[in-house]
Amino acid sequence: MAEQEKPLLIKRYASRRLYNTETSDYVTLEDIAGFIRDGREVQIVDLKSGDDLTRQYLLQIIAEHESRGENVLPVNVLNDLVRSYMLPGGGMMPQFLQSSFDMLRESQAKVVKNMSAMNPMAQIPGFDALKAQQQAFLKAMTGGLSGNWSGPAKDTEEVQDAPGEDLDEIKKQLAELQQKLSKLS
Image 1 (cartoon, rainbow, N blue to C red):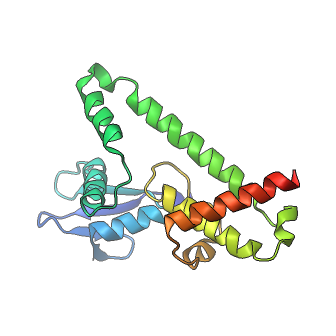
Image 2 (cartoon, one colour; image 1 turned 90 degrees about the vertical axis):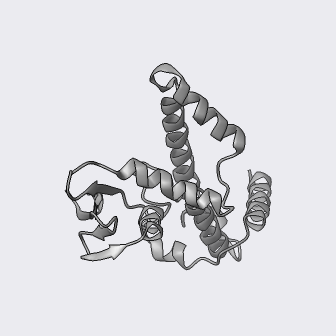
Image 3 (tube, one colour; image 1 turned 90 degrees about the horizontal axis):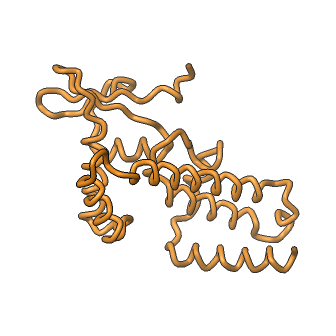
């Protein structure tokens, strides 16, 4: 099994400090969120008991981001999640969420494939910058998603070097690109 396919093992000590077993140093929740945004799976275990604490810490990361105003989940979705805990077996929510995220990843892969260098759109001036922005947008939209998706591009440095654009600006540029594509079709 390749190194990147194995989950990054994080051990929680009795002092509640989190230890990265690959780099032999302590990490924060924000570091763990960064690993996940970079497409890495993580597993967090209690050193003493061996209990898997991954879900608990992932939920804590989401809660901290939401409390800082980084609202990704609309209130009605949060309400539906709470309701799903009241249903026997969780209802259909887990399967629905997994299917939705799978479809999102597939759609993003198709968008990235269509934006490849073989695309005739690549001849348009500024296309490379637009492609980098699109990849950054896709990474930002799915940075915290679970699954085996490791990002929109194999060359993640290109994505990381893309300028941090305001979401509205990216949406506007995406709409303009879609209009240009429609005119070419």
